[in-house]
Image 1 (cartoon, rainbow, N blue to C red):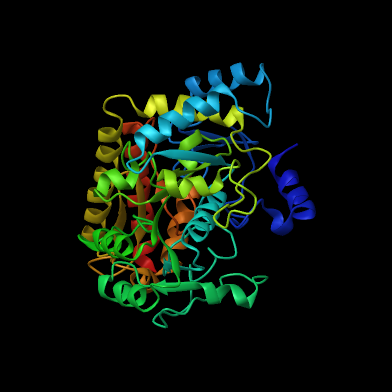
Image 2: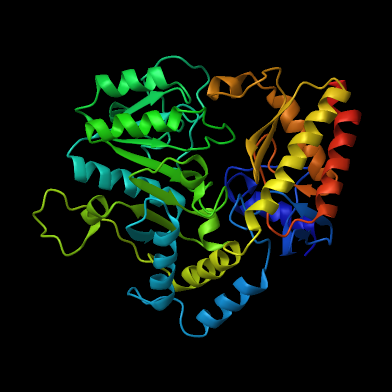
Length: 430
């Protein structure tokens, strides 16, 4: 069936004609058939260089031989057992040894699950109910996480604003919000609510915003002082910014880290990893009457196919030179795209770090917090994304781009050439 007919069928049977929140207009819509390495192909045979990578998981690219072999071998042994299996045990060891806070691990199915259950364990451990998150931070799709991720205005701290219909109003009472990179404001809110706070949840690299020197350290200090659990949401940054994730990259060790995406090389898997005493709240051996017992389980926890894919992925990432290469590519894109902006008088900033980047059309010299993101020109960013898709690059309009270990210099060359063309032909005229 050709692409046009498939798109018509998608509109007929899928909500919004798509599989999630990403909707592409007709001029850029496609239906993918297959992928190899850094390339994706739609059902009509059009090739795209992939800079979205499944929204991050495919750090080894599509159909990496080591991952394919590991999955094929496991499928022949069985798909799932609802019990201990060797790939899950081996992957657990790998994660604990890599994670700076690693003592114990519990596998779940997604990054959303990992953050949600990390919060549950923090509540069980502390006996407190509130959490603090940072404005603009994304922690998945649970009712607690979907607050103040994309508010239309800023400044009403610590009030949390739901980002979706269908969330009970009572949930917001348990969520506090602070601006990212503001040590003073975060400290004031934590001081005021120290006896109610179970956890502080933070993306160490918030979307594409780097932490200012001392910010994460201040969170570590104050949470330790008050017995509040510090949770790093490393769903994006884990095994991507460094072998030990953002905790290693920035030199701050949380109590708990939530992992996903890169962890399993394109297969559904998440993990919660951290201090043994906090993790023990999910121990099924605890008495049912124990006030610290948290239920953290699921049909596909430790799914052996995903665990086998994850083990193969981490074995590849552990190889010498992996992260040097990722940063080399990322630094080149930052330097050359920002130079293009100066040449063509296009106000922009390439935010992010290493293999996680985002082109923001803004006059701000620094991207410090969500308010900085709000000031960026979203219409230009959206147009940039659509024009890049039309030129054969799969990206998510006005969102992050991801780099893989298999992106080549030629891929980067083509990306930069197309970026220059879009700036010249479209963006500079808006």
